[in-house]
Length: 469
Length: 155
Image 1 (cartoon, rainbow over the protein chains, first blue to last red):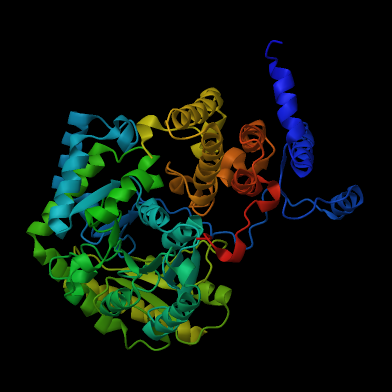
Image 2 (cartoon, each protein chain N blue to C red):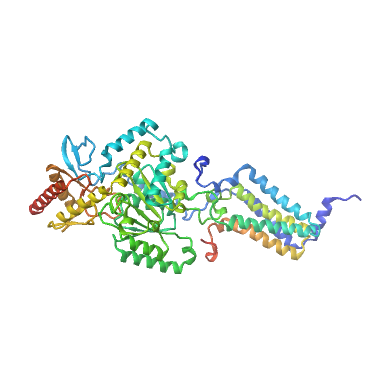
């Protein structure tokens, strides 16, 4: 009889133990059930029943598409019609400029403008694409090289928008499950960056190292309990060099000490301190005599001292190279127009060549501070060396009232030929709203007489206002 | 992420396994594994089949359920949501019982049945094969989605 494979297989199967056959039978049935089952997503919460849905829909009242604004911005028709350096021309009226944050008047500097114009002749107006997508032009690379050499950092990276420089940088390192220790008084860009990063955030009181220490200690205790999770949780310290909202300087030495003690990364936003603090304007590290390499990432917006647009970050290659692939503001927005890069480069050169600019700015700030600090009813929250002055009421009432009072004071100061502004906050977006303040920004173009005049006008108006109140 | 070769998906790790070549490649790799084990002279057919089954289950456990995260850069898009998810949990964005997943569950079962048959239901081989079946099938079930026993391999 010929070999029949079916009989052979059947014979083997018949010899198999019963439990095995049962198991295989069940498995085959299960497989068929599996093959005909539908695919689905696992929901954490059970779905609503039809009745519950009906109830929810009945309860719902639609919100207006545009919610009513609880405090509409004050209307003013002020038009600035010339480049503002030492003076600012508002509606055709020349006033002393203490409103813009161009600390050295680089936006109106002749050589900067000429450089920008010749860059337009050479490159045209736009960069025509993101940096990694045909948008890189030799001047971008030159700028990055120069700024890194200038700051003594390994590499730098150029962004096309000042606000997104710091928020992209933070978002690039801090991810889900990481923890960020941030100063309460940090500006909106920093807070938005942290929000977008989805990491856990602990705000410490403004410039309060004791509070920061308790938070870090608390976290260290948590780490000892959850060592396995702690191994993959990154820690970050975020602060501003010179605070936009307060005008004071961060305690850098303490932050660096904390950084090494608790093993955190330090990110400093130097938008306001670059070109302002330190002997040669190299920022807060130079001011405190600290080593620049102790700060992991420094971000700078070029809107202020450099009088251009965009921003840059610098640090070690190990940290910054990540931003070329992970910095969303770098990857996905068009590169900085070449002429703005050129003018920023020129401004950097000018600041580097004239350390007098920095010392004059410091003199001006110190002089105005000495004039104003003794004013009754007003407290200055800024540091003596800071060119950004914040006048706040000594006896605050409600936010709205204080704001209105200071606003009226600002209008009167403006009417006497000195342009100052209120600090504007996007109230709906601020997590921790600082007290309203009248902002005075000193620049290095002002002479001593100008400062004397400013302090005279400000003291007069403030005294008048507070007496009338 | 390289802009020049930018993918349009948030997490490419969730989709590449659905591409048409994957099923063929998968079966080919199992066949090559099996035939190379068969070609080793002092391995009997039974040993070769048990080893095929065990190696398959073990390596699928490593690839799908042990290694976490993605080889692609997903952090810059989802802020690290996939950092602590195994590959199995990323496939089809966590959708259960899709055709690829069904295939990957059925393969160890078929391998088990074949291995049992070729080992002639010997008890020592059966024990190894059953363990391999459990390792190959259990973690793939929807009931074990995002489950980490005693926090092992959690972070």
